[in-house]
Image (tube, rainbow, N blue to C red; front, top):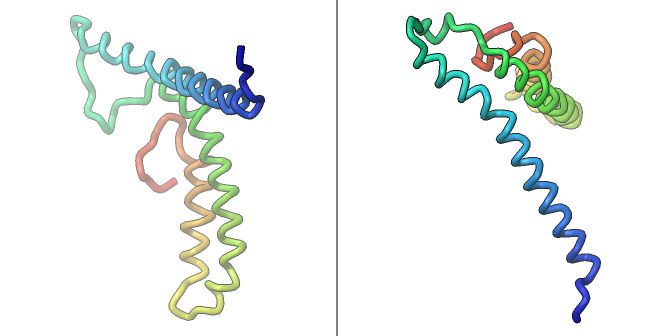
Length: 125
C-alpha cells in the first residue's frame, strides 16, 4: 500500500479547517434569515419602514462576534498603511494629509467603535 506524503496531509488539513470555518459561518448567519421569514408569516405582522426597523438580536450578535473583530484588524492595518504612506503624502502638495488620515484612520476606527451595534449603513458617527 502506498503512503501519503506528510506535505499532502498538511494541505488536506488546512482545506478541511477552511471548509469547517465556512460551514460554521453559514450556520451562524442562517438563524437571522429564518426568524425574519417566520415573522412575515405571523398574523398581525406589520413591517416597519427599512430605516426605522431596529436590528435583530441575530444581526447584533453577528456584528459583535464576526464583523467588529474583522473591522478592528482592518483599522490596525489601515493605520499602518497611513503611517507608511505619510512621508509620501506629506511631500506631495496635491495630496492632503488630513484627507488621508480621515480615510485610513478615522473612518475605519469610527466604523469599528462608534457605529451602533447591528447597523451597517454608511452614516456619520
